Length: 179
Image (cartoon, rainbow, N blue to C red):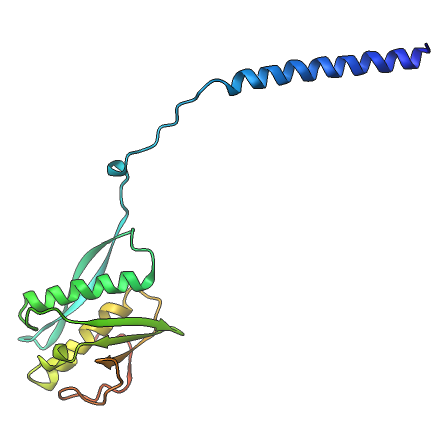
């Protein structure tokens, strides 16, 4: 046999031996079980963030604000906005601006326009044009403050409506912090 062939066989045997030793070491390590600590559901902290809701102060004739806390398990923008509306309705009921009832509403967003379909009973609870305007802007400002939409278009009972009570609502509303 030639020297080149002997040298090649020795190199080949060396590579095979080293590969075998390394493989055995990997196999040995893979049989060792490593404990991974996984937090329990109760230990996972939910991230919370606050956003203001606006509600009428009928005596002062303006909107007041109150921060509400929302949890991060709300994944979609519509879920967050529905939670804001739920909190606003509770606040409006607690301040006796609207009657305690099960109000229906729907919302959807298209091209940065938020369409809010309200139950007519909400706007009919206003006794003056100023009350109705404050009530409208309590929804508009509460929904536009978190961002993601530029305007709100109001629908009543699923259809565009000119008037429910006093004010022509057949238009789009923008955030108005001066009301």
